[in-house]
Image 1 (cartoon, rainbow, N blue to C red):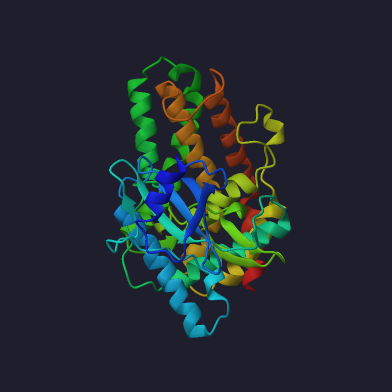
Image 2: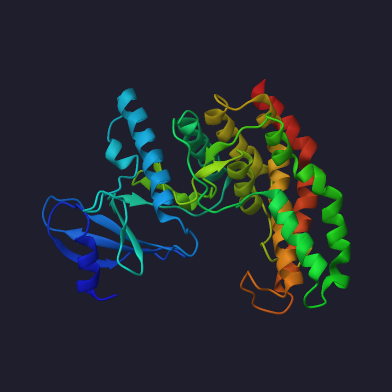
Length: 362
């Protein structure tokens, strides 16, 4: 966009200081982001175009984020935490009092830029421990939030819904691919009932939905220059879900010794060192609010996400590759097989996971 257009959008928000420049920031895949540079002592800001194709209800999305950041800020203030402005994101109201601005085509939001920070992406046992502790603490702080948040992406981690999608794909068999993957459909159906136990336990009133981040990874933590954690970022997917979401989704990618689309299945195994480090950090900060049932089912969470991703990749393959971008004809099938191999490795590691968790609780 032209500089004058970007500056006119920024002018719709109640920022301090005079804007000197609006320039691209980062390389996010979903939201387009800019840094707003101001004169003198005024803070700089971050301007983002919110992708409403992914997040259709921007008002609800921003309501979630403002509620979450406000609750965390209040807890820090009550505890006398210092430097709070760097430890929780601050969003700026538009002139009309909302936390977003609609220009007739796009939705925009502004937050205060936190200077002198670094991000990390390497997955090691050390970084996995930090991720576990940080997101466990994030969940713990929000365990008593007094407002009901909305679901920013409907049925995002709903296993029953994902299986329904697969079964519809199987029923229609649009491009005639079912015969070659029937064996994998059968393997997934064998596990279907147990893999949907989260939703079943919820219906029985035994399993609560918590406020989860739903995108747990090292990249979504902001660090200071000394490598100390400042805050969790990228809050668009923060919504009610089972705690299994934040636990299992991280391990699906971080504890995979191979690639998500590895053609050599010998490369794909479940890394217990990553599991142990992440789980130790997570239980350290989340144990204060987790129920025995939630803790008991953490190994289930580790299996749930490679299972869910196998279901999603396979449904897309059977449908003719209409959702995920592919680089070659059998890409989604290769992904499906790799995720299923990871699931099998997780299943084999389940007794070891259970034993490790018992040690942490002793």
